[in-house]
Amino acid sequence: MKRLIIKIQGMTCEHCVRTVKNALLSVEGV
Figure 1 (cartoon, helix red, strand yellow):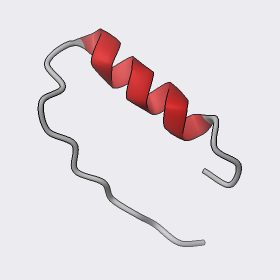
Figure 2 (spheres, rainbow, N blue to C red; figure 1 turned 90 degrees about the horizontal axis):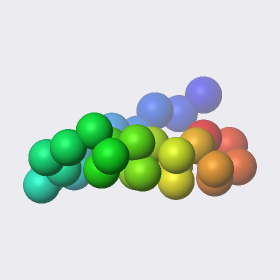
Figure 3 (tube, rainbow, N blue to C red; figure 1 turned 90 degrees about the vertical axis):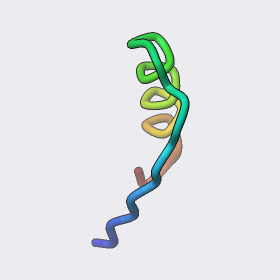
Figure 4 (tube, rainbow, N blue to C red; figure 1 turned 135 degrees about the vertical axis):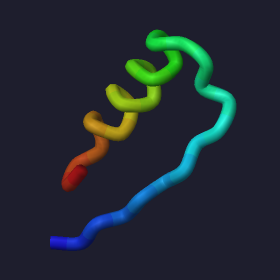
């Protein structure tokens, strides 16, 4: 299993965090 850490700046609210998290989780293999 590989691990990748992506640093994302400028997310200032929970909605932003949830949007990015859901987008990543929708990718197969993530």
